[in-house]
Length: 378
Image (cartoon, rainbow, N blue to C red):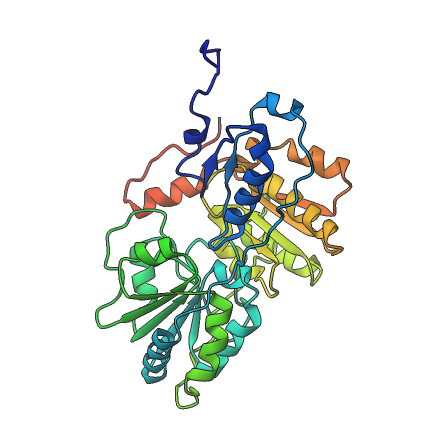
């Protein structure tokens, strides 16, 4: 490295910051096993995330006796009981609460607990903006659909609620910048998240740090029954299809077809971002651990992610089909993943939504009131 070679990286540990939780390069070969242990521990501690460990290539040649300092680290954080009790009192006093369950709930295994809390409170449930996991059955009568992707859309959707309880999600993740208040006037907000960073970044409301599943389990015993509340109206699902199919098929027609043929235990990896609203309407997620989407906005992850889900299922002895829903633009980034899927004989069906345009960009142009943006693929 001292000779500044072509494509050399003299500061390997800083290259991936701030995209990783920890970045490190051991100074000696003897330190590599311990560095692995620390990297593994940090990656699993909440909020779980990637780490970067740089191993100089000549370290592999160094002899090392057996490494015996294998250790474990807890990955659950208990919520503050007194603060949670205050949250419970405010929830019980709410006249028309709204629940927003984010990806942390499903990752923590809290799907059933989320359903139980919503039913006890008789509260409307919304999907968190741009979720990478689904944490509530999207065909449930209390489910009111996704909040949307802009501050204005989120504020409009929450109008009429006196209290919003966000569990396991940011407040609020948004994609296009459309100026608006974060909450309607007179609406209060409570947030429960496992991530100190997510809690600190919330622009409004009061936050509590703790494992979402543990917090919901405790809330179930603390909150009052919501039998006096009027249950929210079920989400409207018009679901109108033409008598004669279009050619090519529209997104609703694609999702309607998939809803008819999808096995009950199928898992979805979705990177067709511009059609996610239609997917919720026509192809709702109804089981825990069965929906995966982007957590960061990087393009091209979906095709190989379907491979990762299928390999993970195989490793833990689970047999279920994986449906990779990919936009035609995203598909171009990592099409080689279908070779890997074929080589490993994985149970994956790829469905590529081929509209020959950057459809998400077009929808942004409408939101930003800047029509005429060129969005066609060459």
